[in-house]
Length: 195
Ligand code: GRF
Image (cartoon, helix red, strand yellow):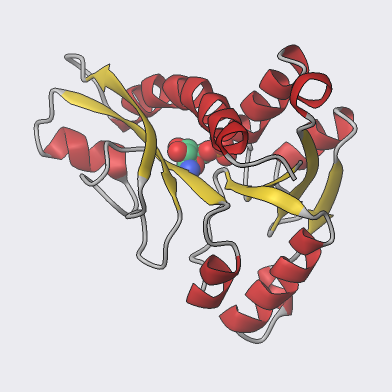
């Protein structure tokens, strides 16, 4: 079963999944392989990591497309070229059209840096600090047409510490993201019937 991971930047979550797949021998033990890493930005740092790990990479520049629908259709064609059993959004900073989400219904997941349903959208760490939260965290969820609102698959909690700012809190949350995302991806695939 093939996994396609979508990134826009550093791709640290993608890297964590790739490392888990290698270290836990997903291909030999479960027939799961990371088939491709796809980015909407040619300068995404994660592309170099993927190439170093022998994973096919593709770049689709959203600026080369006249509409969101046109880009998403091209993106789906590229992804489908790898016959994905699961499409993983990992720091992919694009809002996807309902048609794209429908096309991958049940096999499209995302990680969001808050304890959903709290703090959907952007700047989650600063908003949690501004709200005086004592805890923060991250959520892996199925992607549905509604932004950051699909069924929750995994969560992790971190404490907000005195003196935290958005950067220190983000780093603490990110380290948890790297733990829960590989686990959630594998669980999602093993729960699906082989095929
Ligand atoms: C992370 O905060 C993640 O929660 C969000 O994008 C940020 C960067 O992720 N989805 P990555 O390092 O590019 O994986």
